[in-house]
Image (cartoon, rainbow, N blue to C red; front, side):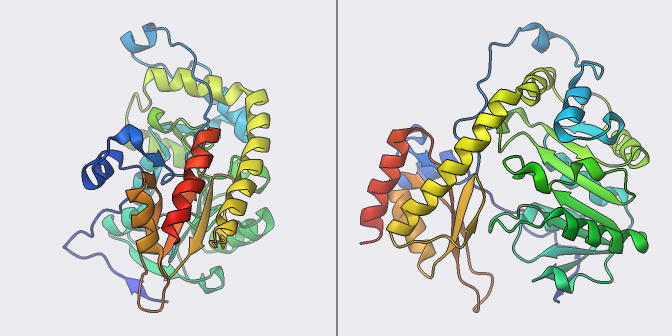
Length: 343
């Protein structure tokens, strides 16, 4: 297991998908002319209703019912929930709640976790498999994992948590992509000491711009997190719209069915073009390919943005992540751009 240590020179911040203006400058076409499949965000997100401008004029209030609605959605007790300005805020906050220690992260996972713990002075241990997770103070998992879509069931995760808790350690689980298959979630288990769960409304609900997330944990840990964040952690419009989205059970049920169908359609489309995925979730498909950088470039030249993951070393293979197209013309456009890209 390679160990990485915090140094006086901060590591470069991770790069992400969705950089449309950067792509527009590079490829010489306006941002609106791109089909952006680089982010894994639901392209047909929750339909946002008109917003009363009073929510723009007043300071947000914590007793507006958001936490109670969120507790119902996540299957948690209300006092185990803290609203965040995006789950990214929780990713940055958690490393500050523990003195420097040994933190395990998967070698191929959402890079912001490793970056945040490293920047806070912790010793990072890169793990190729969970079997290598031992003698750690904190284990951080993304479930389903981003970008390869690996998913661990509840029993496996609860066993890992028991191992961590027995030595006073933590298990941190980022469930940003779990809403389409919530049976694997640990959100309802956060009465257990040392268990922290992060949730987001950005992916499944397609509301990334609201910057709404939640940290679920025991009340004493949340009290420390709340004190570190200070007042008004979530903007009033975000609170109103998030509450309504989490309460819309009919839309959620219909969307889970549609996303599973569309994920299968995307996997089939890529396979027919000689790019069978090796992993994925209801919101994206992931494939390793030796020519992934060239394919990424060719697709971008045709106005389709994907997420490229460069090879980590000489023994690794680069990979691409494809988010879901939305409307039927988007599906047709992806198919059309794929054909010459693979010629």
